[in-house]
Length: 158
Length: 108
Image 1 (cartoon, each protein chain N blue to C red):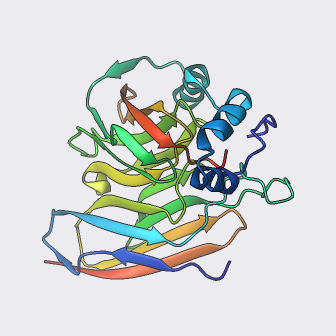
Image 2: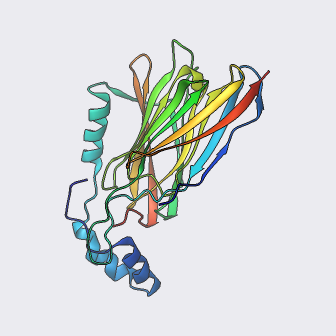
């Protein structure tokens, strides 16, 4: 969050520019210096959260629109297959962005009393990117799912 | 910002063992800290950074939020019905304020 090489245009200015048909020019001018995380930053963020555990594919379902016209509010639903009993439940789900200024979007902490590991929320997306959902289980195993979202107008104040 | 408007949807009744959904929204700018004002000065970050759900005093679900969460955060999640009582929801603001809302549920 401490990166200072943000584009000089605010979201509002960008929207004004879009309204007057100047979005393309403004977007091109702003894009090269945008401080967005990439897959490497996302990897790092995941490593910080889960340590050295190996990540398996499966069990996690991440639902996002394939195309988001408005990057200010993109709905997502994540669910994890689990019996959610005292001996076998989902501990946490981390939502990680590969294209926002800060990769960590949200953490959801479940208990067996949750009954079901399924949540829905809405997130900002600065640009077209992959979003990851990483789930840690009570036995220490880690699963993930990944999905790409094409973003028409970014929504991170850039 | 005045005290935020909170809307929640918790079922009034549930069968024992049933997993029910709770839907919530809170009116909040979720100022990301990434934007700049008209003079080009950064607007300081101010978001709701934590959400907690307690069921009869016991924490059953929580969530940590970061600046990528949209303004006026919407959240839906689930809880397993075990006994009649109170669902207490709390949102923690960056400025230290905690906004709460409670609902009663009858389990039978």
